[in-house]
Image (cartoon, rainbow, N blue to C red; front, side, top):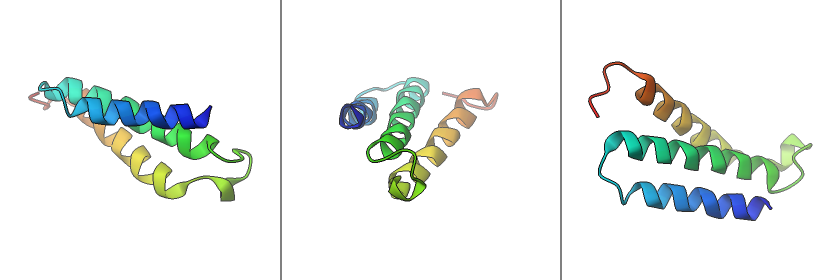
Length: 78
């Protein structure tokens, strides 16, 4: 099941590049990042932190928060 979440995340990330509206791109990218975080946790044994894919989880979690910040920012001119 985790593999499908990884594929879904890839579709969101690549699909975001096909759009022109910056707000929509951020929204789609945020979902892709969240899917990659879930993928990084559940690909192996999610109960063992050592099995988590930290190089996938960390940057995508940070990027998801960046997207949330800009989506909720009142200064966003997108």
